[in-house]
Image (cartoon, rainbow, N blue to C red; front, side, top):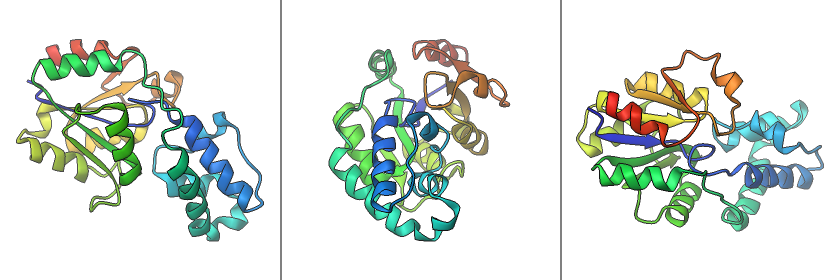
Length: 215
């Protein structure tokens, strides 16, 4: 029986690709480096901002990652809430999950202060816990944060669904021993997700209810 659902944030609950791309390109521009398209940034996300910037920097400039991160954070801090569209069907899903008494949390590789601001702004009072990068747990796909959330809720990993839009989230669920659900509306295209060793893929948030009922 499923008792808790842990969600990834970017590409799962909210579409933040434009803010991420804008902040990344701001950092690159400040450093005099070539910029990338939004579609390019879709291939850079998933492992935290430092890894995103390493992927975007020219190879001979990757030693300047701390400067790139400084510029990225400078821009993102001002613009993180500019446009944060919640994916269609997510509010209804969260309302139904809470009505059924499920515990809800967010586990993201986004820096924790930014993640908490987004969750508080987009989903006030919905999630009991948010765990982002740099608060004592290694980044996904390491399972530490997900397992900590299960412990906070007093449920076993097998009683948790872990939902995300990437292979990082899939492997987090596997490593934690949780039920994995891949969301095809996010940053990673469904054709790519279909090549993964997945458990469930859903095209609409409402489809998660059937998985929970059948688990």
